[in-house]
Image (cartoon, rainbow, N blue to C red):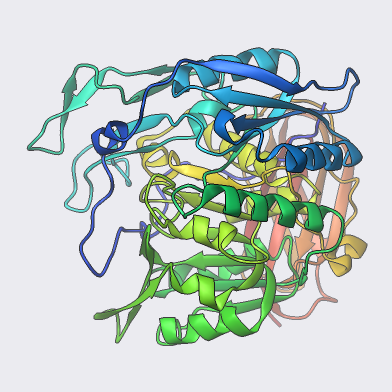
Length: 524
């Protein structure tokens, strides 16, 4: 059983500005019908290229588009060998066909054999979802909310939930009426994802053979310590998220103590961002900006004007970064030509993976994702755990609007390299493998600001071990209190923080399968 680390959920809609599709040419998303018109229906066929080993190592699948299987054969053999060396039991399959339902049925059978994660190499089937956004869960259509249809990789991650196509969009209104149109619009039952999914859709970037070979070669070099890695992150947050900036920088700090943090409203300009990714190296870039698939938009002049960054500039800049978290509207919408997330991954000499969305909205509660990465979990598993934390107690309308477009471009079986400084200060045994059940909500309520002591209370809904830790701005745990076992119910704790300097800290409560955090200020 793999330990599951879960964190605080936001019960009510967050007070966060939604990412918006903003483009210099007023472009619009490719529709499902436009995308489907470009597809040639093909019958489903799977051919085994390499069977999984019959042992207890975690099962993972590499699924490659049939037309690419022979061309990529040697690199897929190398990838499988690397995964064996990393402790996995990989299987490699050649896949032909355009049916998302057939692909999901295949994954269901593989999951029953122990599958943990799968990588889609090439243009594998796409499932679409449609929704009328309700970002604030108020039950009505606000002026900035409307209809969206988008690729939804959660469909391939949640294999025991019920996905249905029950509605169609009215042509002239952002409304839906009963009917069927080939786009899913209902997701019910057990909606928590069971497996991790990542995909490598390179044809929308250019010559897919060239770009897939490049990515597979980079991933091999990275796994064997031959790709440049800088143990720091760039956190770049544009105007609309300044109120969230400090918290989000903290969240990235769970993995990267060394961070470049840019968040001043008049500083975050394309003219500042472009040389920053051109002249310095990072392992991870966390970018928060309004965007469209073809680039980023940044505000200036007190939000009255826009700067434009175009995805095709990435080729010449060739940023020296390995991974990206793109809180940037539709940057991972891989059905669009030249989509930005794909260019960061395929079009650079060091890019390996990008988290992003195929619609408006994007990832929130970033700390859940980065903390899971800091435990050495692969990217696809960190995204799966993040989704599980969002969905285990059901799904509010705002969560559907914010999160259902989230996907992972690149090799999701890679792990972020945990910086040495962080590995030395973190007790990696503090995740307790006691249950794979997700408990009810926990609450953490310290007084802030605090002087000398932090008094906190919390509620456990499952008995077992627990720990309270205090983390500083660099992502270093500076204080901890561990309980061998606690009963269900309310608990209190007082922490002596008098030796610590003034500042803002993260107070983190961890149980066997849950984690919740809260910022607390220490004053003198």
